[in-house]
Image (cartoon, rainbow, N blue to C red; front, side, top):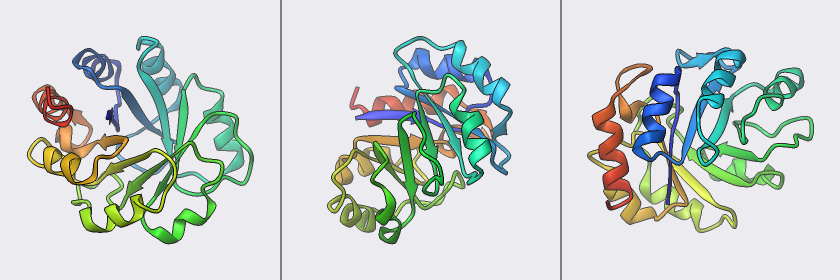
Length: 190
């Protein structure tokens, strides 16, 4: 299983997450969010990381021009919340919140089940399990994941990956080293 820490806003938190063992770092760009950063700052964060850490730009934009600008970064993948109007060259992680949205996932390399959108709302395990059984792609899950519930989620769902943002924060955007350590330890059974 892989763990992505999302909503990273600075190099310090990114490097801390990488050193602790996070498999992927997500930065939010071109989106109305308290965690959204400019593309040049995202690029600085990505360049500070080693080659074995997956770098992901997360966006809710549907603008073709904005997607093209995101694709110019050194991100390894782009996480999107709707099917793009243009063909992108980078691998796509398609975020969906229900089964209806699975109709347009053919261009996606992986699916993220996300009903929370970084707000810490607990994920619906039973619903996610049903959706996961109907997908033939790697599935990541998110939503209210924190050090206290990650083991239960992993045990019940056995996802390809976990995506955590608010569950590793002390306040919006401020990442907590102890919470990151606990997520990694409990999520990966270390």
